[in-house]
Length: 308
Image (cartoon, rainbow, N blue to C red; front, side):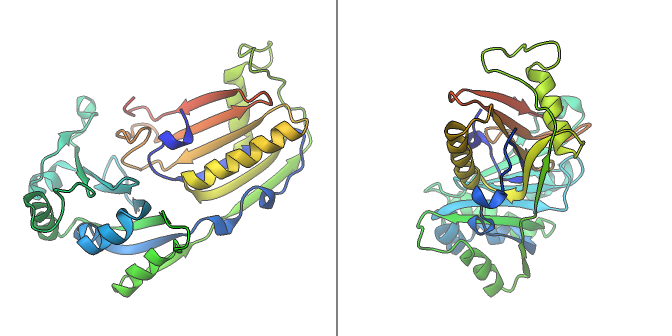
């Protein structure tokens, strides 16, 4: 499982580097990403021809509904590639009147329905039946609106990613920038002694015990680490960070480093853009442990009702 196989962005990453005192500015700049929250957006405004042509088709657009819970509310996401995904309660689905698939968790008592609209299809444009039906039904269902967290990465590097925020403001929406928060800790203690070729390890630390140890570090347990945390990133930034960390690993004497990315608990999609479930928890994370020889351990962390 790689970073490219994740659906939406992340609300947090943890980087743990044994035996090294690093500063996060050497690996990640807060200017690398521009995210903002926008208030009270109706879904019909996300399928306008102007919006699709200017942003959906000309960059990697990440939008996820805010202040919504996937086990209680209608939730929405617009993911790179132009797929608009709605996870709807039974009453909303009945009123909307668009084709949908039954939630993968219907056997667990869920009455949710999944609506998927590919906004980039040639048949989805003004004048075509599928577009006009979606537009009409979205406008009729006044409850289909939400606050959204938004990030846009243009294909053209000369275009500023914040131009989408300017667009929404020009349309009369309230938008507020989201600033990354960062924390760093350098605490001396003995890191686990692990090797890629020996996942069973010794009596003190095997591959699964390492995951527990990394989780304890992320929770602030006083053990050891050079630890860097960033809030709300996207895959393109994480890929850059991964490359920089690998360079540090091969050029120095670090035994390994780990990169954990935490997805949104209430995102309607998770791995490979499959439906994300929530029962006792909404875990949605990936941990990669890299070794100097280029090998990697991968931990895929799922919620109890996630689609595999």
